[in-house]
Image 1 (spheres, rainbow, N blue to C red):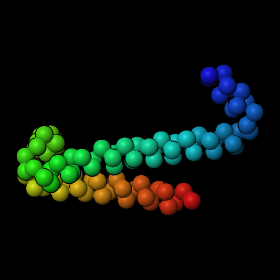
Image 2 (cartoon, one colour; image 1 turned 45 degrees about the vertical axis):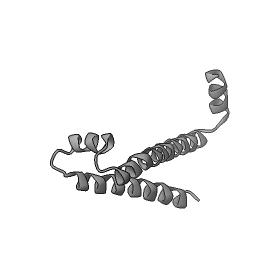
Image 3 (cartoon, rainbow, N blue to C red; image 1 turned 30 degrees about the vertical axis):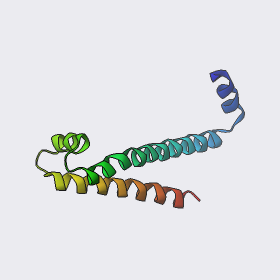
Image 4 (cartoon, helix red, strand yellow; image 1 turned 90 degrees about the horizontal axis):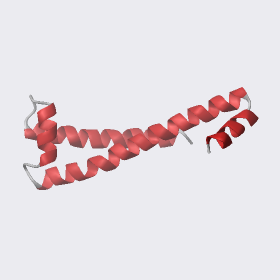
Length: 94
């Protein structure tokens, strides 16, 4: 399998190899943002439904000075920020 990649990169010029590397890096960044966005949906919804849950407790242990309400605000802001970055990236990549 890696032999095919070597042949593929051997055919390309140096400039094209750099472009493919940059494109691959952006795709990995987009996948990371997508994973963060999807993984934050369930904790936010469960935090809105239940006052005490394992997600808020986990985040509260990380940020010891925050109350549960502030921790909920933090998770909602992280969710909004992740989707904002993802949409900004998609808009700029057109």
